[in-house]
Image 1 (tube, helix red, strand yellow):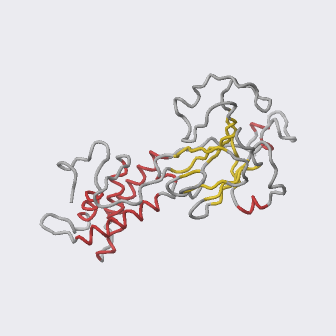
Image 2 (cartoon, one colour):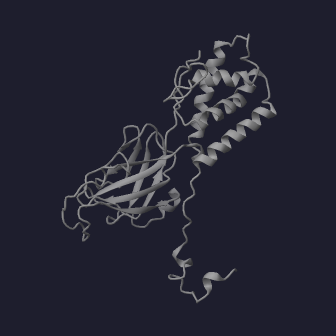
Image 3 (cartoon, rainbow, N blue to C red):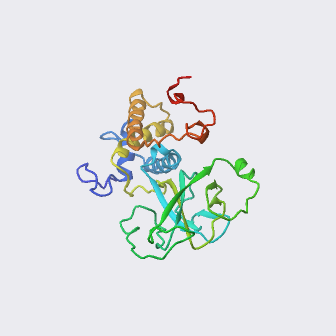
Length: 283
């Protein structure tokens, strides 16, 4: 079942799913030397692996990175995110981690995300746009995410059309709904959304697990813990401890803590109750 050479992972794709399932079963005494593994055990292992990765997908600290994808505005009040949507993604994100609006100002559409070396290579000068003059370079403005549908429902003038400042994401299935507010006009704007990179969740036994190396150990030990009840076993303390340790390694590698933001009312400049020395008071 293994496609690895002498136990070594493939250079670009890592271990095969069958390799990791075999190792997981060994931790349960089901794949030791001289013991034949039931083919159904591999089938069950593949199903458990896909279900486990689908669960991991919803945890920010278990996803290697965020994806920045963009789509042009059309003047619509809602845009659809998911397979075949305005933003065509393999799976619909459960949450938008952050968003921003790009005033194109004569720059070309990127649509495939940010941070490309050619994104800002234009030197064309298209003149002022909406009173702003940046020499043809795009300008990004952060969008504050509205946290709940109840808060979005509380907006009094949902059809307001002007400079976008907020956004609400409704993660319905199979396509999520992205509501920018105020509604930006078409052509001049591009909306960027950041969401968790999709993890593979349709793997087969012969598929490579194309994830960073620190995931190999975590997948093997966590899979062993998941498969134990299928064999009428309780995962041993060693399996549980190793699963926790490997997950903590991933947490350490993936953790990104944004800079803490404070409401304007609490900052000295905007606080009407500010007095000299307030910033050093310990209340």
